[in-house]
Length: 88
Image 1 (cartoon, rainbow, N blue to C red):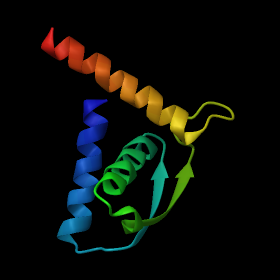
Image 2 (cartoon, one colour; image 1 turned 180 degrees about the horizontal axis):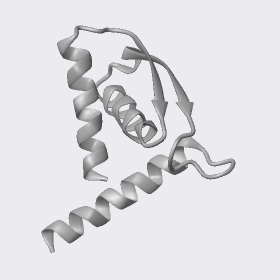
Image 3 (cartoon, one colour; image 1 turned 45 degrees about the horizontal axis):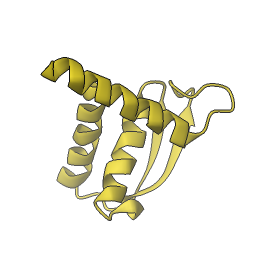
Image 4 (cartoon, one colour; image 1 turned 90 degrees about the horizontal axis):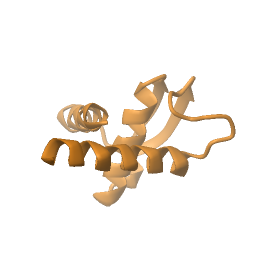
């Protein structure tokens, strides 16, 4: 999970370096998770419009009729467990 967060930060850094203000993204497989995380980070930074749309192609983590908030919840839970392992 920490690696997915780092990938999300790298995506945001790329958008910033290229001075891209509004983008449409295509996220395949594992890239879906880091793209979702990047979108969440940008929303928290009050920049939700930076990512205009995301197309998910065979996204990892979504199960059946799963919802995005369920995936984010699982990711948050994994991040919490990883932090406990790192600290403990």
